[in-house]
Amino acid sequence: MSQRHDRRDAQGRQRHRGGARGRGPRRYSDSVPSQRARRADPARLVAFRVLRAVALDDAYANLVLPTEIRRATLDRRDAAFATELTYGALRAQGTYDAILAQNVDRELERLDPPVLNALRLGAHQLLAMRVDHHAAVNETVALVRDQVGAGPSGLVNAVLRKVGEKTLDQWLGELTAGLGEIDALALRYAHPRWVVRALRQALKLHGRGDDLEELLIADNIAPEVHLVGLPGRLEPSGEKALGQSVESGAVPSELLEGAAVFRGGDVGRLSGVAEGVLRVQDIGSQWIAQALAEPAVSPGERWLDLCAGPGGKAALLAALASDFDLHLTANEPAAHRAKLVQKALAPVSDSAWSVRIGDGQSIGELGTTFDRIIVDAPCTGLGALRRRPESRWRRQPSDLAQLTVLQEELLDAAAGVLAEDGLLAYVTCSPHAAETLVQVEDLLKRRSDLQLLDAHEVMEDVALPAGQRLIRSRPAPANETAAKCVQLWPHVHGTDAMFFALWQKVSHR
Image (tube, rainbow, N blue to C red; front, side, top):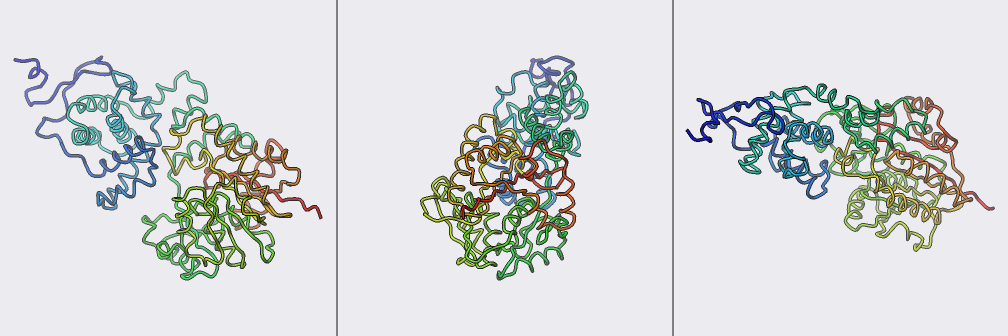
């Protein structure tokens, strides 16, 4: 009998090399060739395609996934499966890679990227989803056969069978044994080590030094969908649309008026979404936009959103400006993102807003000053890891050098066009100290005409009682600057980890 046939048993099951790098007893496959699936399951194929787009095209999963779900015409149940599989595999990629490395007979970097992506999908099914182990392995092997080829299917089968022999807790117990706190937390909660260190520092600066594990856990929980009804004289009415969303199952926010939490599935089916008067927007973003617009408004004020794309805060500010008979200039450097801003602002009367396409650093070329300016600066996005699971592995510490220079330039440009007594808000979706408190302190050193206000006061003024209690109950921060700046947290406020600083330009009159 040939060696090839000798590797099958009497029923035709394939025998594979045992264990990692061929060590351990040899086992036969779970099924005979005629019983193996050879076509990819549609839901798993959707997840595979999204991971491929993220890896090859630097795509964002939250943008690609809905398109792939529609392309595959998945029903609601399969769409939910594909969503959990996609986000889960991306979110825990670093942890799954550490586990896979124990069971693959070569460096993971030497695997073809599609094979590695399939292994990550299989690992998530085995270790974190309620999927039968036999189905998890067989369907992943079928996915590889269909999308990659028959060659790697044996490796995938052998590796996943080995991975499935232990629970996730057992794997983590082995892999974290003897590690220091940061390394162990990074592996257990699937965050890069540098991110864990940065989050620990930020928490300490804001008086929450004991919250690190709670924050890492919150980062791995899918965020709730927050809705905002654009205020003012809109037709159709944003307020009415928000009320109808509550009738459809949304729950009014306990933090902020004009907002709701939706857990009912497809947001697109809600009245007002297609017209743009009902929007998906994190409560933190809504809260800060309302806070900037809250202090007494004077007739004829000019407002500026210096980094407006893709238009979420700009739409809310434009609606508020329209209500006060004011004007918002929305600035966006990229033409394609400027189109997104125009689309976001479309429900609001065009007399209340205009869009400028140009670098924020050159805003002074307009030759005008503004009474309220928001700089929602490009940043690492470490505060939105719940929403963009791939970002934690895509971002690198080296990104900070370029981003912090840009943030500094944008703040200087904004301060240069700020009218006397005007308000300047600095916002990042990152709690990293280099992007937040350091920028605030440096701007104060450069501009003696700016006074740092207590941003907590305006946040409290626009909040509902529950939100007011959260703002008041903040712990003692590390320094005076941190005491005046608002840092929201997923595990405390249920929002993205957004940072908010507010200055007023000192009058020389």
